[in-house]
Image (cartoon, rainbow, N blue to C red; front, side, top):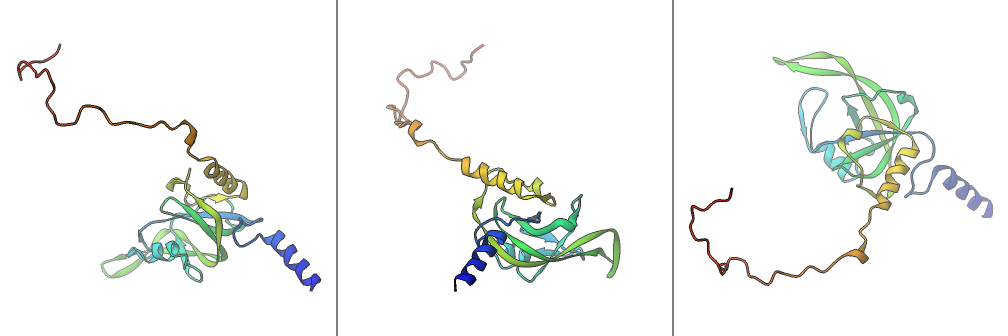
Length: 191
């Protein structure tokens, strides 16, 4: 029994717990929009967004139309940006290339650039939501663990200092009541 517990602890230290960031491999970021155009130029409304938003994208294939620059062979995790927030990441089971197709007058015609097809694996929750510093420009990039930790540190540092808050009181004059000295003429102006 102790031997098994040691194995589990060793595996957790190596792979990370259920709510920790993975150690080893790189993160491939992707922006998940509410409306997206698919490989065949059709408008896929909310299917992809719903899958990522509800954390139910495991087993699906994500098609990245704009491939990142850099070495994608080191990417082990897919880090989706949903509503400008990072909530968790998925294991990447496989990476492949596809062709971008366009439908013209009922016929399918390939476009000159390839797409990246990502088979999505298991979902892993981050310790907390990362909102601070997450922008759509971060999509289609390859990150290492230090960039994820930097964003996590930014989000942890974002807090409201309650000791310097001041109590604001309402003005003594009620809104909408006439001022004691009305304007002498509506045509007045200042130079």
